[in-house]
Image (cartoon, rainbow, N blue to C red):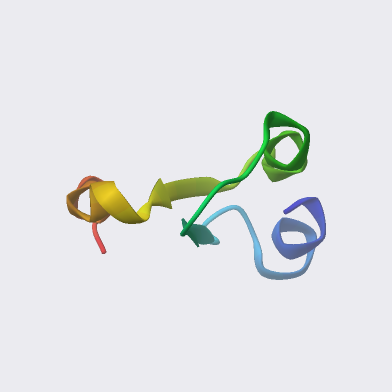
Length: 49
């Protein structure tokens, strides 16, 4: 995410759409990235998507 912001500015929107199981070890790498679980797809509306 840092590299995206350095290249394109602070207005970059990057959202992971997660399906299945992801352990906490995986999600710690998503710092600064919004993510939405497949069973909560309506949360995309909160992100303006």
